[in-house]
Length: 79
Image (cartoon, rainbow, N blue to C red; front, side):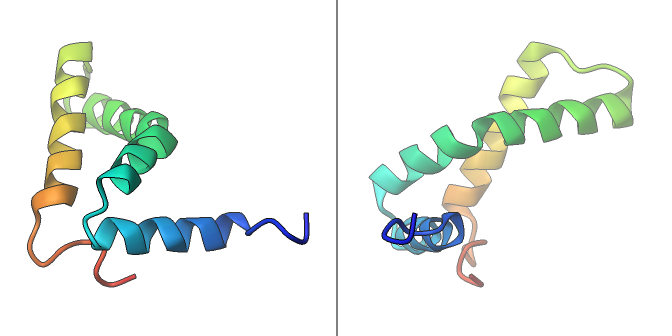
């Protein structure tokens, strides 16, 4: 639809809000990308260790998000 922002524009706005520390943006980021992050964690764990328990997947997924929130310099600053 011509009056709706494109997905790319929405992503850029989301990244700007994330970089500014907007808690609502973090909730949206998690909602939007949790399935992708979990998938990548699961596949990587299985590839590297030959197994991927739900507990390990949950722990590493939490670490990924914690790193994104607390890293310095912030990983999203380059966008």
